[in-house]
Length: 218
Ligand code: SF4
Image 1: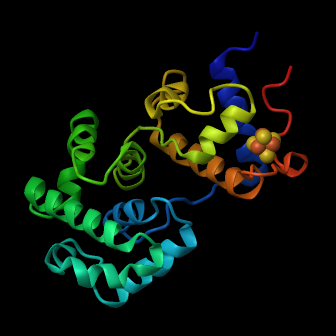
Image 2: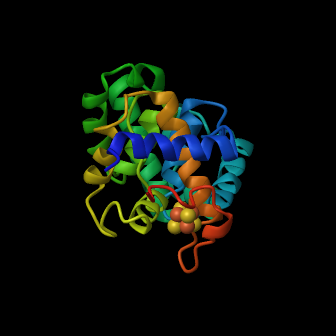
């Protein structure tokens, strides 16, 4: 019986060898990454990029500007990301939180220890575990593993975890066995997103073309 750590490292090695570094998450600043993590909830990344372009064009991709802009105006600007009224409110909650905690200074906020900060982020209306972990890992370079729908589907299809399971259990599936290395967690998640998006399609997986084919089979 191959142990879990070996299985996880094998998948990482296979994907990295086949696909190389993914250079994820795109963004010119930690703040842009945090905003992107909220905008990407329930939508494809290509829609997020349109919303981010709009925010940049209006000089709204800055903590103070986001804090000051009326929520109705913000909703119009981020419309391409979908669920724009909800997401505008979520962005405003995040901006409020940022000013309340660190006077709008994201670097100062991210200097907090990971457990305290994760707890605080999860208390912000509209920030769930996937968004919090995306901010911590990609904006803060902190060692937390991001679990998303692709990760869930891939592990389920390889008979490793149930189809529906709590986020924390899936996260532990990785974090209990891998060294807490933000660089590797960053790359691992990005590779899983890539194969989930490209090969492990919801209706019909393209296993024959996927670099994960044959993984965890004796
Ligand atoms: S497409 Fe097939 S081989 Fe690739 S991750 Fe999904 S189930 Fe595995």
